[in-house]
Length: 264
Ligand code: NAP
Ligand code: GCO
Image 1 (tube, protein in one colour):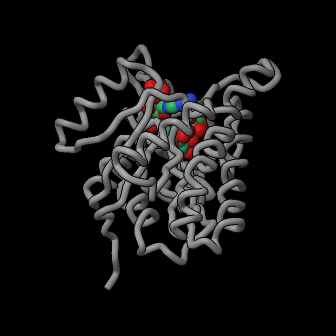
Image 2 (cartoon, rainbow, N blue to C red):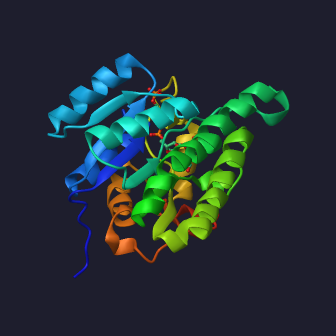
């Protein structure tokens, strides 16, 4: 029988105070997993704990920056002590900086690479030894359209998310023999705080030009919602995907399949 249940599993979702991470954590909890998550500020943590409680989820929250290797190790050790070993890691925490590359400072570029690429390596490294010992584990890296496509102003983000796609394939290659599956989820354009500036209404009340551009570029003719990622993350976290490894599942309403609207 096909098995999507996560009963008895422990999932760590990084950056899951709100946005895509919150919806993914919710989906994993609804499929039976116990949830741990982190974010960087007490204010976000307080709000998130209330939001989880309001939907009946008893999540354990940590204030931890995913780029801090010692902090991540301590968080994973504490999760193991309090909830049990991490069976599922979702590397969701991420940032974007929209700056033309020739105007970007090297430190700004490094910060994006640090959070979007090096942090997933740090978090995966923290859970891998336990997964290897138990000969079971699921690592899900949140990739992007920018794992495949470029666009103006997002050079560091595209470099990081392209790198994350390859890190995904490498973890799958290196640890597949331990029954560890590492896959990516590549969301399309999803309505969250990260993309809010791209959807801001114009002074005359009309849609932001980028907003209209994305709707026209998406066969589904809409932005995605965080909830659109709920089914895919449960699939990749469950035994239903045990022979899926090194794959990036794009959840983009068809963007990557589409050449774009034809002129009338
Ligand atoms: P978001 O609304 O900006 O949320 C990002 C989350 O990551 C926040 O909870 C933030 O919390 C946390 N975070 C950021 N840096 C962190 C760090 N160093 N350590 C710990 N937590 C950190 O973003 P989102 O749109 O939900 O995106 C989530 C992931 O999906 C990101 O990796 C993003 O690149 C990717 N993605 C988004 C879209 C989209 O269209 N929205 C599409 C494709 C991929 P704190 O600020 O409290 O730390
Ligand atoms: C941007 C966006 C994107 C999306 C997403 C697409 O400025 O182009 O923020 O990069 O958030 O990652 O999949």
